Image (cartoon, rainbow, N blue to C red; front, top):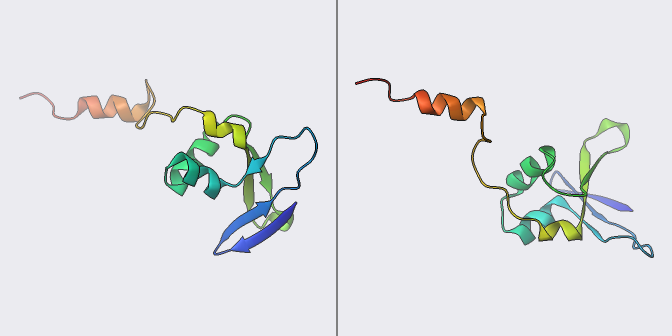
Amino acid sequence: MILQFIAGRVTYAPMAKKGKVEMISTSTFAERMAVNYRTALNWLRAGLVPGAVEHELPGGAGNYWEIPVTALEMEKPKPGPKKGSKRKAKAGKKGGNL
């Protein structure tokens, strides 16, 4: 695998191996899913992208994600807090009694 540091982001060109799924970068994933890069990172960190694997760079210089191209077939998660989250519960308390 070849790693490149460009503008604070890591890009890579995975070596194709017979029988292996093609892997794409976070920026490519975000672009093809038509979402912001930060949104794609949030999905990755939340474990919502099937088959994605996080790797640390040598010396603890950061991390990067390997995302299988098949993950592009996933359904986009709905925006907003999850059911039963504290944010949603607090949002319901706004407004108070009149």
